[in-house]
Length: 267
Image (cartoon, rainbow, N blue to C red):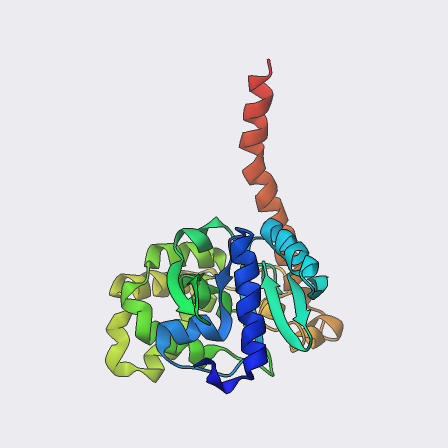
């Protein structure tokens, strides 16, 4: 599949993979390469996406810089960039909306692959599905990749893990599953019945609950630009900012037991 790009560019991508492998820095090859691995569909890509934990991303950037790559750190707050001439490698440690952070789970369930003549790992199909579900920009919508990924790998999905990943964003998952049912009516059983019943039950409950009290627009978690008018001109509270505050509060709550345990242990 790599023959569609210049040889020098493919060589630069393989060089980056080899450098990080030699440095024993864990990473996962994502983007078009992972999508092709799971579906057999190749789409041309202008860069190499490597998914990596934040601390490892900082180390990886130093390794690439010390080997002649030009680097940029914390671009948009969720990735680093490295350039070999005009050839680009993205070191991705989160998503633009801050929801799909690369954590240990990505690596615990990673899949072995051979890409660019290198032995490496690709992200789990579930994490790819989760992260792509929030890409609904005007200029980019990954819906067709989600339906193809589900068609080819959905029967082996760890559905409890995927539901846990979506957590309070379950409506986004339900929306994409409904797209899948529309696209592939003869393959609806790929999604277990209990998953659909669970999500539809939540939807029914939300209908009964009615409107939220807050005039909130969570659309900016899906498209930061397209829903800006709601915040700037229509009086909606920014759901993206609201969600960041909620996630920070949840992290603080998760840290309380550990801190309390440490405090008791010191007496």
